[in-house]
Picture 1: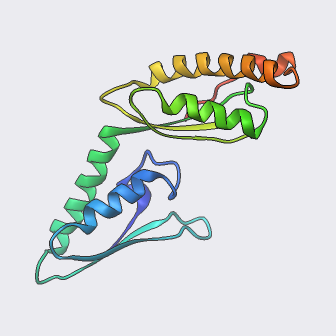
Picture 2 (picture 1 turned 180 degrees about the horizontal axis):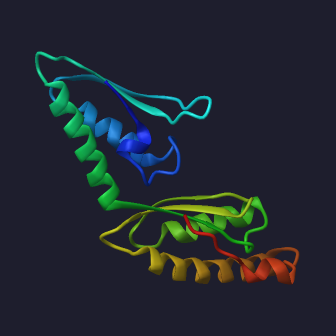
Length: 166
C-alpha cells in the first residue's frame, strides 16, 4: 500500500522529519505489517509512505485507517514551526541557539541552520507556538550578545531579527 506522505502528515516540512520515523515505526509494529519504508520525493511528487502487509492478517482498508489515524495522532501531539531570523550569522552561533532551544520544556527537536532558518518540533501539550515565538526572541537576543562578546560584532541589521512563519 502506498500513501502520499502529505496525506498522512500534512504538517511535516520534509521527509527527514523525526515524525516520519515515528510514523514508520508505529505502523511497522502493527500485526500483519511486514515492512514500512519511504519512497523519496521525485520530480515534483511528494514522498510516499509504502507499507507491505499480509492481507491474511490485516485488511487493506483497516490498515489505511490505522495509517491515517496514526498520522493524525502524531500531528495532534507534535507541532512543527519554521522561522527565519536575522540574528544567526554563523555555524557556531547556530549550534549555540540549537542547544539553548533544546533545553526548553516541550521542545522535541531543533534544527538551526546558519542560513538563519530554525525548525522546531514541539509537544503541543506542553508548549504553544506563540510561546515558542517568545522564547525564540529571547534566545535570539541572548545568542547575539554571546556572539558579540565572543567574536566580531554583528551589524545592526542582524541584531533586529525577522520572522516568517509556516
